Image (cartoon, rainbow, N blue to C red; front, side, top):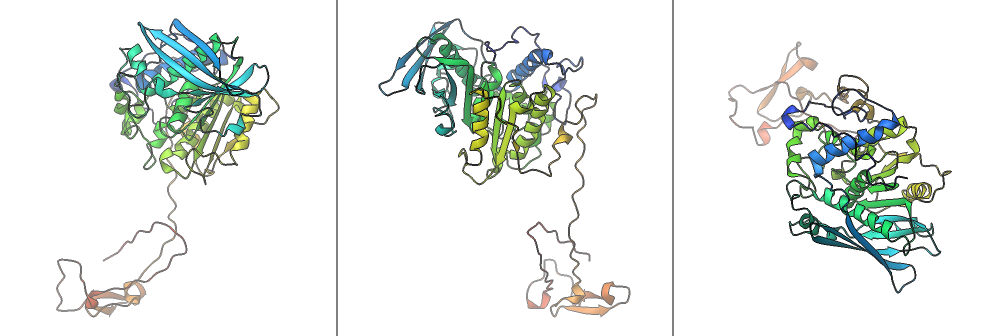
Length: 467
């Protein structure tokens, strides 16, 4: 596993055009295409610089800059009174100001070194502790409010105090929270003598807004070997472009902008096609490291179909590098938000055993989903060509038609049935002579027309009348 936070930090910076200068790309952008348009590459040796282009785009257009590792970091570990408990303390000083991160730690028995999972705001995120306990894996809690406060960020929050050029408009909380996870890992590097953590086998996990947090942390720090992002919703696994085609889900104009840069909203609506990246590339940034994402179809706002399409696209990157088993997704329903059903546990255990426990024999080819009819390939079949075309969806089937003839139905006294061989069924209905056409819809017993019909399936029906 990588020993540096960003091994491609010295790669050339990509061009970052303004909205008016960006081209329209309706399908998902090609993750292998260089940002300056000079071509594409699927060589793994080029991926480090290509993923840094994606990183620069995500920071510039979505979350703001994640600051690099500061020079002044100290850390200590204090064992607790309970067996296998303790607290990791990390002090980060920038511009004469200090932020202190304190993280509870739960250790397995034995001398170590131990693989470890960093849970967003709890020891193991929303993943059951049993997935990690009994597997010789330590659990470390990341208290993200010590960096910037969830749901109520202020310029007085520690992150914004350390970096006064970062503010609530140009630096979203996901840049700050990802920075905090990296500083926690810095601390682990400094306390190896007292806290024996295997730095080659670190994981992160979280759910919902914290699922996004885990995803950004994993994408932006290459020291993280495994990312588990649960039910992350819009701004996480789902592709913004695909979400725009869905109903009431998290979209670019319907998300929490304390998490993102204010000007990300310029890509809302049809302008989403000008976003030079999308979130299949956020997930692909984790390659060649391991990633498992989950969804929950009981909650429409999570944009699960968009997460599915995005996951399929990200999986193509992994498969291109011959690493298909390092990416998995499990989208199901029948459980509460952030509750891990027993059906998902084996998938999580498999990824933990393989990528934190080092058991290469475990099968992690996991692509569980309820979308057999979704044509996910239409979103990326253009990759490798010169023209970013999104093929149209096939026409909706006409379904059943029910023909209702008024002359065959009971009618009120204001109507009369007239025989006419040229009419359907040899008759038609008209208003009786002497009755003028009403200005408003007729009412009362004399004006009714009854058209009874039955259906054998739940569906949306349209009533078309020919007068």
